[in-house]
Figure (cartoon, rainbow, N blue to C red):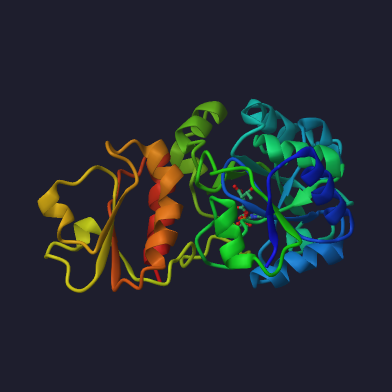
Length: 328
Ligand code: TXA
Ligand code: MG
């Protein structure tokens, strides 16, 4: 089992050294924990796919310390039409936003699954920032969970799923955002590949585009343009149902994830209740959702029943993850 380390400057130096030696490190970001390797080291990046059991066709996000480091990973200079799009949202960095841009020559094929574009993010978490600076290289990092399982939002979640595969895990506390970054492809007319807490409404406003243009599906013949966005994803092992779909009183040992506090008579119908937000504050729901899903998934329940919210703003990202979790 790997060690979970407090993010002292010594631990950050050790983590950077491990990355330099081609090893894998569990890292905190403001969205979810990542499983990091030196993005410019094809063999180390290959280790990420092996550790996660991730298909080689599913590309990785490259994390950089700052906007100035973009030239190391994207085709440089950025074509003017693409750069004009980037400028409209670049102030959202550092933060929970990933952009897809034409790939630079230093990025190995294994990172992008052979694609001509690369997903890039400048994360905000101070520990990840310190590590990027210390390592001095871009870091490829998917969420630090086994392929198709729920993303980790604490260092312990990472250890639970991937403890044997990592040289160490930096403990940056519980993730502030709790859902994976918003992904937008800027190579052509902007297109949302994954909703997140930077909302499609914000992006639509920035680009001056209608939401349905941003969220249109690809008309290309490419099999899967957001290759990681398979219908079954983020799935606990326990079957998931939405509250609105289960009118009758639950049968068996059922857990409930609630977006508001429940009264005693409602609570008593469940073997366990996790209130992720007392008053349906969607930021709180995002923060706590994955942790609660993991917790209930370890309780040998027959079923987990989860509340829903409206499909707009942050709610769009929450419902996206819930629909995938329920799709198994
Ligand atoms: O918040 C996050 O984005 C976290 C933290 C660790 O940064 N990372 C994360 O990585 O969620 P991952 O690998 O679990 O999800 C990345 C998604 C996948 O669906 C992948 O297919 C897509 O990004 N992706 C990566 N590179 C891409 C590319 N070049 N073109 C299109 N989609 C890409
Ligand atoms: Mg993931």
